[in-house]
Image 1 (tube, rainbow, N blue to C red):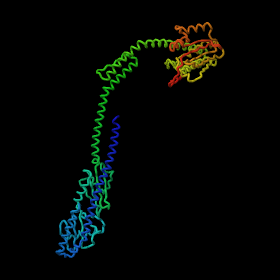
Image 2 (tube, one colour; image 1 turned 90 degrees about the vertical axis):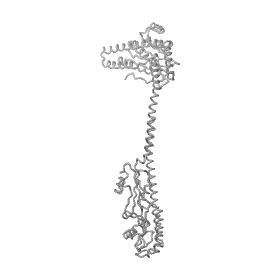
Image 3 (tube, helix red, strand yellow; image 1 turned 135 degrees about the vertical axis):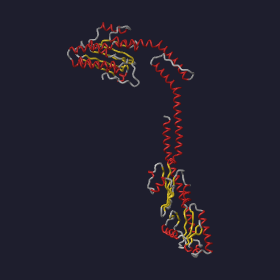
Image 4 (cartoon, helix red, strand yellow; image 1 turned 30 degrees about the vertical axis):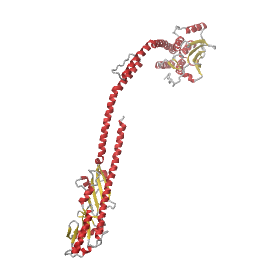
Length: 556
């Protein structure tokens, strides 16, 4: 992960560098080509100016008066002066090999290189024919000349020309290479196309033979760059293998990727060392804490040495011993004792409802109400599915109310419109208080058990919830016959006893509340002034300040 950005950055830089190198290489080659063009053009212009000056020398009159049989003394003196001018021109030129003049009147040809020679009529006529082509450089029998009428003396008795040395020109071309493997093709555009190139190069030979019809895209692994002279006399082509352009960059990146590989190897080695020296001991320490969290206080960690990890292990072992002693001696015995009593009392309530439900279902079947019995049995299964699904000791008051309504719906299947229940509370936030499970439904169950037989009209159950200071008061009342005075007094006394009988829902719930909240809380029973029985439940008010738990559906 550490090296991924480095690798991506190197690849981006690599391709950008390749593109930049290609542009720089092309610019460098074009610059060398332009300098070559300027050198050749400058040399040709210089020689052309010198020929113009030579052609206007008065010494030509001495030669023109010579007879075909020979040149007189004054003519020889003129030739010597021409020789000196011709030689100076050649010495200051980089690409010309000879300057000569054809003198038809004397039947002689005078050359700076060879002196006086026999007159060559064919050459004289051919060069004179080039005057009308208006080409600065012309080709004849593999030779290149400056043969232009423009700027020369229009004298039929004198024909001055200069010849380009192909070897000198090729040596000059070779000095303009930007790369060692660069192939150069030098093309003259005169009366005939003339090419200078390395004939051993197959690629250059194919380009010339195809008259440069091959495009750059058809030249794999090569760059083709061209520059033409300002007057269009000649063009230079350069063929450069791309591996020559990118050779330095490739060697640089081989070194960079070698360094990257070494870095990755170092990181992996460092990771292994750190994993062995730090990560693995820390993982063992975390596993030890998980064991303690599960209640296994016998967990001990061992490590040789006196480093920081050994110090942590020693303190962990000390903590485990002290924590085990503290919980065993002062806390865990009391908690487990109260939890055993609390769960035992709660378990007595759930079978009680099941017994009554089977009793109701028995009457439905006995009376032949099969349809309601079917719906009743489905509701009963859903009711117990909720009981077994929700294993928490405490639930929201809203959940407890929904559970009670499910019970009411089950009972309505049996009694129809003869029963109703009303719930009253001022603030909906009061439903977010946590209460012990099954503290409402058993009282409603008792109302049906003892009150429905007495009332021939509608049996009405009223449930009101209110907050008084820091206490939650839940009152359940009905319009039944109430409780006889002597039985009521007995209930009140037994509810105050710590060892009251636990086979009744009233006593079970009262014991649960006193164990959980203390003796100031619990259940009280009275007869309502309007008739019927009234049960009041008092518990501490504790609202949910954090995000409340979602109310679980009683019936799916």
